[in-house]
Image 1: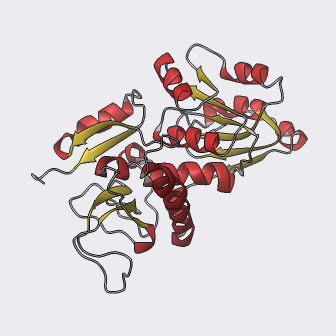
Image 2 (image 1 turned 135 degrees about the horizontal axis):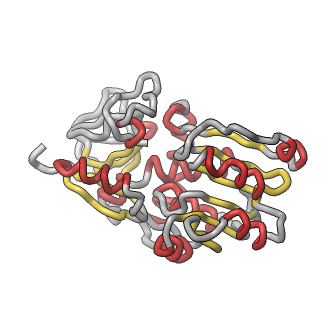
Amino acid sequence: MDIMQREGKYPVPIGGSPILGVEVSGIIESVGKDVKGFKVGDAVFGLMPGGAYAEFAVLDESLTMHKPDSVSFEDAASIPETWFTAYQALFLVGEMQKGQDVLIHAGASGVGISAIQLAKEAGANRIFVTVGSDEKAKFCESIGATKAINYKTENWSEVILKETDKKGVNVLIDFIGKNYWNQNIEVLGLDGHMVILAFMSGTLIEKFDIVPMLRKRLRIEGSNLRARSLSYQAKLRDAIYENAVLKHFAKKDGVLKVFVDKVYNWEDIAEAHKYLESNQSMGKIVVRVTDNY
């Protein structure tokens, strides 16, 4: 999202800051007169509609969370947008149920890593992911994916259809768009749900037969967390804070983990974006605002 916004391809929602960044952690410097749950000096993290690339950030109380002492500021800043998005895609939009098969594209991305772990904890039967290297495949399988497929060396749709005896998957989380559209439709099973979160390969599909949608009773839905209502995002905050942060991250029980790939200093933000664009990362990229800024 940050790269797309920087390139002018991601319109900022009405009321959102044009400054990049939607997730942040830090120490409260001041609070509004109606704020009841937080005070100056509290260590917090949260989601915002924009403006996180800055020394000071303004958070709505309903999207702010107390940072447990056992969670680092770097890990805390990696949680909000990634885990909120994965949770809503799997459960609120995709309606994943225990025992279902799931396909998650971009498995080694921040959202992909979160979705793998959430699907596993929720009792998914098989979790398939697509990745761009054998190293990423091994990593995704180490955190819970049943089968990670390197799309550069294997036909992922053929692999999944073989693994499922041609039944396909129940829930599919897609970030790719155009180039994967026909294969996505092919691997969706009866009454399958596909959640579109991004369109990295493009948006226009020249030829598409809608018969499979009718025959398999497919449901295809797009989802954009940043443009959702404050109340909707607050429900996600509550769900992730209770079921992930307090239940697992704070206790460091290993059931759910935050994976930070690299931490950059603020003055190296250009290098951080270059690394993000290189598609090498496995986990979140965090930028630390130094004392110089």
